[in-house]
Length: 247
Image (cartoon, rainbow, N blue to C red; front, top):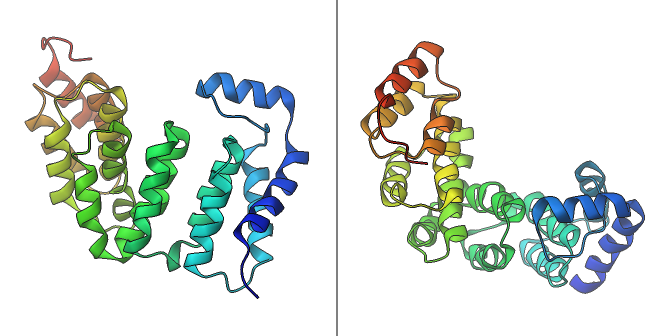
């Protein structure tokens, strides 16, 4: 049977609509400051619905999964787009470097951390962890003019960190290129990656933070030291004492 991506997307929408509430939809729209439509579905309910829909297509291959995600994304509805990310995440082990073109297109269209972050960290990062030929594309993201794409390069490193396979060379290169940026979402992403790394390699994070104490932004610093041993975090805070606020 030929897979019908539009029909599969309609199946998911049919499952999601009854799960939403107007009050939650309005709350989420305000919180995310989004122009998208919202059904008002909770994340656990959405994930259960998508998981159930995916089970209805046993043997789903990577091409079908990407087509399904694209079909879901096509309409400007937040839950449809979150469902698209979930479909890609569930198909994760099948996705390859060549599928990053589709992922990148979604990242460029997302315009919100609520969609960009899982696309970068949960989808792109896991693809790259399995398929190293993905890295040239992600390296290009690190210098892209779109800050959401640059953020995605940083967050793609999270999968390796969480799997105990951190790419410290790339982290150092990406962070060095972006340290001077004023964009909050870049500064936060550098700190987030450092915070995750500090759970496994606090010495590296402490050394990196100390070496960049005079240029690191406030939000990056706070995230970087958040999970460090208290005495090490205190030492690094002392290094910054008396420095002019960076933001």
